[in-house]
Length: 132
Length: 122
Image (cartoon, chains in turn purple, red):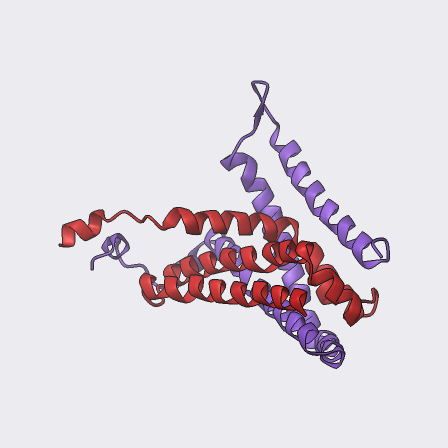
């Protein structure tokens, strides 16, 4: 079966190294790789909880190993980079109009960062005894 | 044959695009706080979370929402980007890549949601 993509002139695998905008695009695409690692860690933690308290302790030990902390630190940076670029994109893709006036894009970006802070506060409340 | 294949409508794309967008929002808004607490502050001992407390938080209805927003939707977001990344790098063919990426995301999502349901039944 012929796919429309095959009809494009062939590109070399290294095409994206030719311009810094293309490199930035590929870096942004790659932010999901440490995210996958974090998701796998969470699933492992859930399985540990299903097994026993001892399994949970050894999961915490695994999570506090230096290479794991570094990968998850990278995942945090990657998620914030994704957020930073995604929030700027949003008002361009979907400009919001209220009462016939277009909302300034800075307001939309600020609103989205407010969402990040709100979720952060929810986690602070959950994990520092507030919800006990 | 060839002509009809070229004209074939990709009926499944809105689904993948929808999951990708929803996952992108979760990745940006919910995931940073989840990584900060679950993968950094708690393992470092800055914040403590014992097994009993973790079970009561995770194995609940809000726990299902948490897994949906932090695991399932971001996994579909990642799957979509990896599929297109493989295309950009001219690796593999799109059809098997779709099965691999979306299939993997669906499988891991099922494990994650199944685990929460199992924990709720325990």
